[in-house]
Every structure is written in C-alpha cells, then in structure tokens.
Image (cartoon, rainbow, N blue to C red):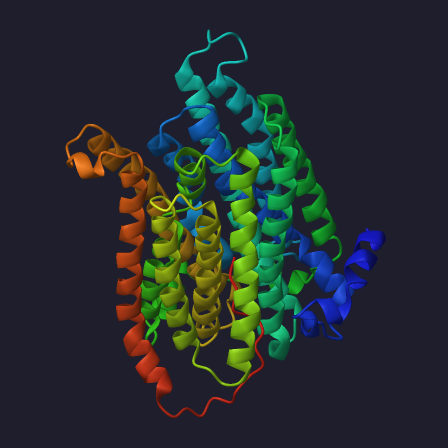
Amino acid sequence: MPNVARMWTHLGPRFLPFADAATVELPLPRLMRLALFQVSVGMATALLVGTLNRVMIVEMGMAAWLVSLMVALPLVFAPLRALVGFRSDVHRSVLGWRRVPYIWLGSMVQFGGLAIMPFALILLSGDGDGGRTPMWLGHVSAALAFLMVGAGLQTTQTAGLALATDLAPAEARPRVVALMYVMLLVGMVGSGLVFSELLRDFSNTRLVQVVQGAGVLTMVFNSIALWKQEPRDPGRTAPHLPRPAFRDMWRRFAGRGQSRRYLLAVGLGTAAFSMQDIILEPYGGEILKLGVGATTMLTALMAMGALGAFSLAGRALIRGADAYRVAAYGALVGLVAFAAVIFAEPLNSPGLFRIGATLIGFGGGLFSVGTLTAAMNLESDGLHGLALGAWGAVQATCAGVAIALGGALRDVISHLATEGVLGTALANPATGYSFVYHIEIYLLFATLVAIGPLVRRAAAPSTARPGKFGMAEFPG
C-alpha cells in the first residue's frame, strides 16, 4: 500500500492540476490513495457503457433495446443515492464509522456483480452448453450482474465522496471533491485504453478474462483507498443518538431557493448527453464499420475531452466566470458535437465521428463543471452525503431513463425505416441512430431554456467572494 501511495505522490503537483487540494489534514499521498475508489468506478463505467454494450449488440447479435435496458439497470438504484448518502451521514455504530461500512458494502456488491457477469455472458453467447440452457436464464443472470455492479458502484461513490468531503477542511472541500471526479475520468481513460488493447483480437474467452480482471482490481483499489482513512468517532455514531427523518431533511434541502430549477436543468442536460451512451459504439461498428478496439477507444476520447473541459473551465471560473454560463457553453458545444456525429454517416467519415465523440465529452465536461460548481451554493446543513446523493440521484436517474429510451428509439425507428414505412429516402439502418441524436439536440435546447433564468440571477451583483476553482463540484 505505501508503494502505491508513493507512486501517486511522485506525479507531483506539476502534473496534477488539482494537487493543491492537499492540506495538512489531508496530505497528497493520503488524498491520492483515497482517490483510487473513483478509479475503480471509472473502470466499471467504461466496461459497462463503453465495451459490453457494443459486444452484446454487434458480436452477440442482441437487440439494442434489451442491451439498453441491461445497461440502464445499474441506474435503477440511482434514486436511492440521496437516501444512501443521508444514511451514511447519520449512521449509528459502536465502531464509530459512518462512511466505511457503506463503501465496503458497495465494493462487495460491485465485485459480486462482476464475478457473475462472465458466466451470464457465456449463457448469452450460447457457448456454455451448446445452447441447451434456456435463453431467459442468461438474460436474468446478466440483468442481475448489471444491477449489482450499478448498486455497488453508486453506493461506494456516494459514501466515498462524502468521506472525502469530511476529511478535507472546509476551504479545501471544493478542490478535493473535484479531484475525486477527475480521477473518475482518469479511470475511464486508462481502462478504456487497456480494454481497447486487450480486445484488439476479440474472443468470448478474452472478454471473460477482462471482466474477471476488473472485478479483482475493484477490490484491490477500494481496499487500498479505505485503509486508515476515516477516523473512528463512537461518540458521534452511538446507537442511542436520535436520527432525523430522511423525508424532513429532503424537503428542507429540495425546497431552498432555485434548487428545483437547478435540478431540472441538471436532469435535462444529463439526459441530453447520456442518451447516446448505448448507441454510440454500435453506431461506429454497424454504420461506420469500426472494429471493437476502435469503438472501445471512443470512451477514452470522450473522457479526455471532458478532462480538457475541466482545465479550461477551471481557468474561467478562477477569473470569476458564472458557473451557469459555463454549463450553458457546454450545452452549446454539445449541439455541435451531435451534429458532427450525425453527418459522419452520410460523409462516411470515421474521423468526423471521432471528433464528434470527443466534443460530446468536452461539452459534457463543461456542463458538469458548471452545474457542479453551482451545486456548492445549495445548502445541506452539513449533510454532505445528502447533498452529493441528491446530485447523483438526479443525474443517474435521468441518465438511466435516457439510455433506455435511446436504445428503444433506435430499434423502433430503424425497424420502421428498413421496412419502408418512413419512405425510401429514410430506408437506411442509420435512420434510427440519427433520430436519437436529433432528440438529444432538442434536449440541449430545453436545457438552455432551463438554465437561462439561473444565468440572469447569477449575473446580478453578488457579495459572494470569488473562489479558487476546485471540485467540490463534482459528484459521483
């Protein structure tokens, strides 16, 4: 464990744009070690959204609507993130821990999902017993695996970000939580590159090995991240202490100021950037004829685009830019990004497609930075788990609904188009994909409408002092 910490530390502030998040109370080696739980979450996200959906649709021949439902299943747990965060705030235990039990439980559930997923994929492929096993058993097993991975990573992430907020002094919390989110994207980029290389020569056996390796690394990373992080405080978690009702605390949190319009904007923008998650790689494989490795690389391109957005937005926010305006710029970039993806098919341009995918990550990054910076103004009475859980609940729920709708709409419209129902001009498999991308453009316009009043209010003179950009702004 000390070697891992030293390895992270050697990167140094020169190469880590948010390394100034370290403080005397939370030094850089300890902070970077804690960030490993975000790396494991990013790895699982890249695997589920970036690799398995393309393999199941293109190589295994499954219907996109079925795959979209499976990929969306992890987000069924999303509405409970606010509750999980709140329960970790008020957890009662004689051991004196609040966050550790939830992080460990989430890690175990995530590992369990990744452990059974290879066997579910074998059943789905029909290679296990020559096709004698009922197909429904493979579907049920895969659904259970996806659900467990989602529930585990969301529990771990919500409690882990709350722990990071607890450990950091008040003035450093924004930068600490932001660094945690950057490490999530680092995990996505790194694992995307590794998965791309490992799956260059695709086979079902190799895919199973990749999933099993991800499960082992999940436990290794999260165990290192947890080691001696949360101090025990039995006086704060004694079983006899009263625990406030979640309903009352949620009503107080959600009823303040412009939080409802803010959450609406977050939901619309998240749906706009997420609906393409299930179909982006199949679009590259089916329409543009890209290989598994090439389409898996798209996840890394999107994550790198997001990292670039964080750096650019950080400079703007340091200079006093309005956070809602930054989020609106992200929506505008998204309009260009989806237009590029749409035109990649008639132009038969994989390069334009990759540019569009990178811009999707860049626009989504700007949107995340802006909305999450604004989230720091939403009071939570010191219940950091509740605040981060609320963001995660809205973001993940809207993403799940959008992902499910994206796959279903693609199937329905493609079927109608190829059957000639929509006319000869649209009798093309790409029509279903294009329809979804157009819906996302409309959602981005709706997002701009929702953010508009918030930008005008924020533009009014304020007594708030300008702060250094740091990511307390990033949820999980």
